[in-house]
Length: 255
Image: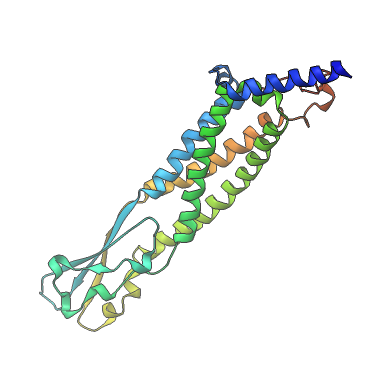
C-alpha cells in the first residue's frame, strides 16, 4: 500500500514538473503532426488577410443629354461587405444630372458570411499558435496526457467541418457580391431609366484576392482533414492495447 502511494506521488511529481517547465524541442516540427500544423497556421493567415483587407469600388458613367460631358459616379465597398451602406459619390460633390447620388446605394448585405469566415480564420490562427507551443514546449506533457491529444483531435474534426461551412458560405456570398457590383447594377438605379439620362457601367475593382481567400479556405479544410489522422494517432483510440503498465501512459506514436 505504501509503495503504491509512493509511485502515485512520483508520477504526480513528474507530471507537475513537465507542466511547469518549458523545454524547447523542435523535433515535433519534423513530424507530420507539427509540420502540417505550421502549414495550417500559415494558410489561416492568408485566409483572413485576403478577405478582411479587401477594398474596392464600382464605377458608372452618367450622361444627361446628348453632347453633355460624361461624369463618373463611384461606390466604394470593402470588408465586411455591407453593400447596402455603400452609396455612390459624384466627382467633387457635383450633382450629376441634378441628382443626389448619395441616396443610391449598392444592393445586399454579405457581412454575416464574410465575418464568420474571417473570425473563424482568426480563431484557427490563434489555436495553431497554442498547439505549436504545446508541441514544441511541452512535448512530454502532450505525449503522457490522454486528454490533450483527444481534445486536439475533437477540435481538428470540428475545425475541418467549420472550414467547409464557412468557406462554402463565403464562396456563395462572393458570387453575389460580384453580381451586385457588376454591370447589372445599372438596371437597379432608377434614375438611369429616366429619359434623357444614359448610364453605362465602367469598371469594378478586380476581386482576385477574394478568389484567393476562397481557395485558401478549401485548402485549410484539406489540411485540417488530412491532419486529423495524425492527431488521431496520438489518442488512446488508435492503439488502446498499447497502454503500458507504466501508470497507464500510452507510448508516443506521432511526435
